Image (tube, rainbow, N blue to C red; front, top):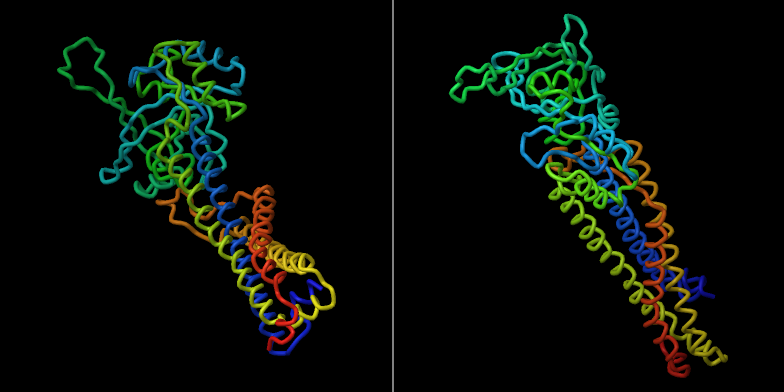
Length: 409
């Protein structure tokens, strides 16, 4: 009986057409709201994951540095082995950081930060657009250099070209320098160009060997600028950072990615809370449109309801009938919306149809992060909302008086 009421199988032809129309509108409203909410959740989740992957991939979960600015960590090799042995830490990679001036020609000069590393982080290796990560000296002893796409475009750099780096250092000759610092100069050959779509990374950082960065910065022995520490369980990142500082004491400092990029993660958290909330209102409005749909259905079927009650159908039975109708509309709408959302998400994931300005969003296409739990929760809540919305019309139908209803035209 519920299905017959849902599709308007009985009654006047014009009445059946109208009921079908408003039912389709109600289902479409629920489907649209569900699809929009699921897509928003998938994009926000994907965005958060992609941002975190980019930042962790570029650096690490925790950066262990010295509290004293520009002061390298002494006894780097010993500190590294002790860090690697700590419970919950999966690795500690040494990094030597050195500000340099890169010059290709007299008109192509820019200041960047040279990072000396043992190997390029796996995330950046996957983002190599041209060439490869090769930092060992090749022909004529030029060490390799990996640069960002933004920097390469601005300086006109291509793989295989030579570029000169100038690094200022303190005068150590013993002669009075009057505060003047003399540069160390090194020629590099561009071996690779990477692109993360993070302008403040691609535009600033270049990569080479640890030993080359040490020489340019005149960093002694096995000292390093920092260690990039990766952890096994991200949920323990704060406690592990505190353990590192407590264990090694001053001047060792441990900062998590969430501390280093607090503004960026705060912005991501804002998107995660605001967008689903705003779009969730669409679902609520669509669910409560069912009230209007079922009230129109009652109006159209008033005589039939009166006949049913005169034949002995109880008010509770009629109430259940309209509650089932509300739940049915919600279920069909949720199913259609979920299928649409999943289809669009998979298409976006595969083909990247929705593009974004990388300068503003740190990526060129909208990322997708699918989570089955989102579909379950959104579906269950939507169906329950639809059932709740159907309660008011159900009570109205249950209170219809048979005699007056049969006379109703």
